[in-house]
Amino acid sequence: MIDEKNIVAALSFLIKKQRKVMKMTQRQLAQKVGLSVRHIGKLEDGTYLPKFITYLKLAEVLQFDVSDVIKLSHKASMTEETKILNLLKKMKQDELVMSRKMLELLVKRGANA
Image (cartoon, rainbow, N blue to C red; front, side, top):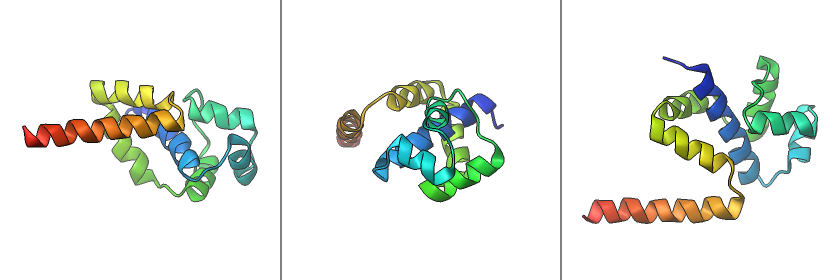
């Protein structure tokens, strides 16, 4: 079942993550999709769910689609994953890199156990 709260969390995470992967500032993204920087900030922190046309523009510029949002939202419905996603949304790029490396080590360690 699709839950609005999980959709908002997944979409906000994807917007921020993809923007950073593409090395774009909030200002640059705002210009490309015709929004204010403040609006992009609200989308990224999950306080605002975009109109459909805005979603389409974001998806085109940031190169994601609805299936990415749905997959991520289903994963977000799991309590621990939701907590992790919320923490990731607050991290800076260097912190995300370090977290990914730590997770890779934990997964590798678990596979070798």
